[in-house]
Image 1 (cartoon, rainbow, N blue to C red):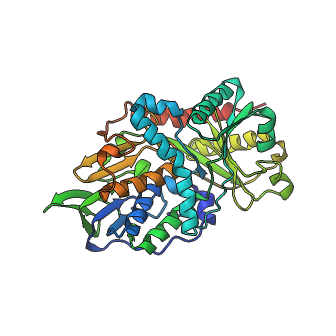
Image 2: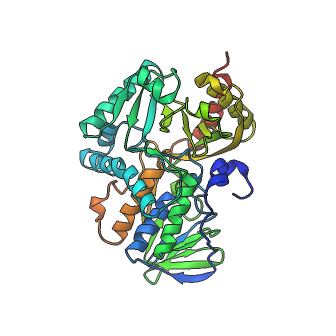
Image 3: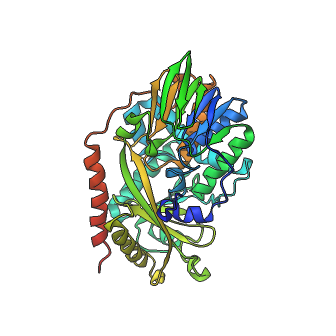
Length: 427
């Protein structure tokens, strides 16, 4: 996108074309205007349009331009933090309500893919959270126990079972979550957009929201060449927020994350790595993730930005790391490389804000955008239609608060990832 091969990499090369859209020119009216063409905004637009609502969606660049088109494509349940931590932070009522929503979210994603025949390389074989050492295995034991207490059929695998599932003996064990899976993330976003348009939503791209104000009981969202008058505004821009709601950017610490994709691997090698096609990631602080695409490319990623010296450092690290995990990849070549930003919050949980009367936002997925974004889009759609009261939303409505030392922490994460990757796997 925007002639930048490092923005969406493999996903841009292999996704079906986006539906035809245009810039907004002139004034239009709607019941609801959504700002942001990622999973949350597109899910909200789809569910609203299916219920007959008059909805307009504004995307500043292209469908899936933000994190929706850049992530690794793991459709996971829950958040990064332990399930019980949600109760500690939110209280039992809100914590369990959010856990239920997030636990069911992958199922919603797969149902939408089937219902709307979205061609996005869906794999529903689960995901593997891989333990690095005994400390990592202890973390997974806790996660497994907390999910099992809630009736979720996760499985804690020992070293031998993990070796068989992953294709390396590098891990002490793993946690298999059968609710989860993988998709081609940009293809899924484009499929949601096509379904929303078919249902009646009006979707405009290349249309940046430049301002918003109330007039005569309506919200007016202004763009460079037009405007939308609506009763409700839903801001779904997450880590790629810019424009009239700077508080959403200021409360997030951006964590860069990159991915490399190999060339399609020979069949004998494909069969020796993730033979059942789960997506995987590990328990390291600077984690690694890996999964296959439909054509047999291994997608391998970690924390860091592919710019400046980071490009060389992270590329060299990725080759060393892959050779260490899978010696059969001695002469691996990368076909694509790309990166994006993850919006992190201080407690690693999403944020639901009422930015003004009838102006809502959800952001801060902390690297878990696919399933939660889809689920929250549906929840907010139902709320704006009056089907869910504010008291019954799965997150408390809180004011946005700026993150402490945001700029310094973002620089630390980018530089720290380079330093860690420069030294790791050097034998």
